[in-house]
Length: 288
Image (cartoon, rainbow, N blue to C red; front, side, top):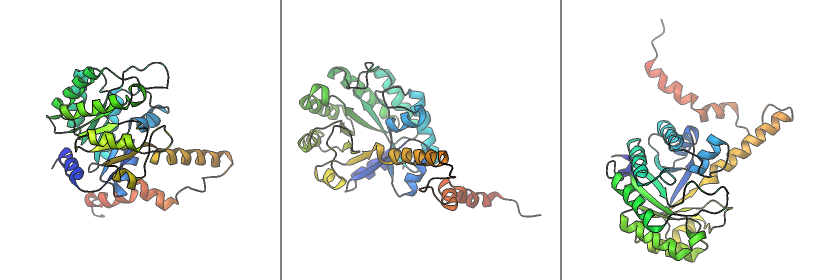
């Protein structure tokens, strides 16, 4: 059973799916070891780790595709929903992106409706005209047939064009065959409910990390509202940054490590030294 088939089976199971946001091999492997079956290869997390900066459409197809390869190699059993932003161009670019992600083993791919390149500001997410978006999602769904990769269609138009336009786009995505629907930046629970209804029974996805101007229900409440998947882009990234800062502060203060640092044995285990030795013994020559 390939990754898209396994993802479809997972989505068919009852219950709310927590999808941690990952960005590299270590975050992917630790997510698997923590018992999660699926993860979101988040553009914001990859931008932070690769560029050392914010997620403002500066990542290229090649950088995101390379990150997908890295996380797949580190955690081959983890079902990856891969962020493909706007598909890196027009409808033909979208098809190339979807096919490449499918061949690389992603279980699902995210395509959004933002205009790119964005205006030279961090504020706002202007979106393409609805008919143009329809063609990009149509292209994505067509290309997805090659590998059976699931297509998640996202609209970012809620803050700029209003909830009615956002809901119309979700209904359009369903018409075009998208597998998972994503309304970004819902204002309140009522808008979440309306977006779930517009999805027509197909699974709805939400970003549930706190801090942004959007409704962020708890996992239990998200399930009650009809959401199927919740991701947390700052869930691991924020404590990782806090840990790096704590380590740097400890070194600057003349210490060898921060108080929160793992014990050496725990660190070696987390990095996979023990697993490497266990595997390597199968190929070691007998003592002579």
